[in-house]
Image 1 (cartoon, rainbow, N blue to C red):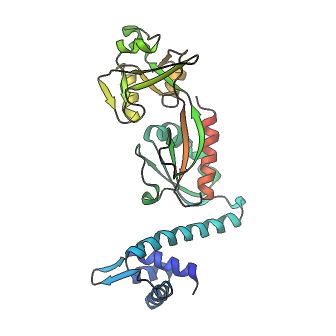
Image 2: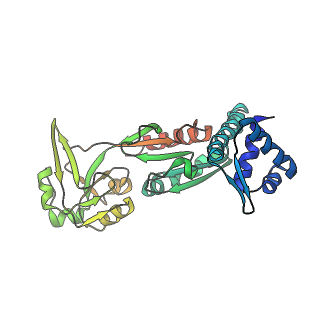
Image 3: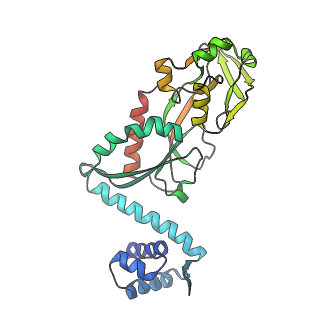
Length: 295
């Protein structure tokens, strides 16, 4: 029995839900599919599929085998692609996940050149501020910011950026500029609940001060944070990436520049237990070069 071919047949059966649909995808007869699955179960000495009038359902062992078999097929395909040489370019679909605002500002506008370099490649970009399950969502690589809490993740730091305290000139004209952390008690803070919340840690010449800020607006998404600040609703702590165009144009202004905030780290995160594909690695390298020139 060709083990990889048997794995591929089983994966297609689970994905399509029937022997006949898998046979059509493989362009073989249904009896051949049934025979392959029977031989596979006999070799493993375990039931992989439950058959009923409602269709086929993987057993617990079948689900575990399905995940590993699919991974093995993907890595075998990846090995084939790499062996054919980089000159042929990247092919297939690349599924990426990134935070909404970061993806909109720093990834989407730059997909064109990457796709031009790889005309046989397609990209499926999931924009989501949640830390989604990469395996369940079929993600090849996720771009995540901040300190990674899960030590089991396969990750690589690809960039870092200053965090800054900022607001609009109109806000500062009305309320004045804070000169030190203690002054923030007199200001409205726009609080980003996913990145530090109301605790803002500052450093200056070895001195550390963490203040609890007050604000009438708390948001759970960076898009909301941007809109509130640009509407002159308060001062905020954010990465320079988040307001890069506005900082460059003067629409927002950085204050308390002699005080520093923790840096913002950008990580490329890959599904645990899977070798990063060539297309995922190429995309990460592309993003790393992009971000080297941003704020």
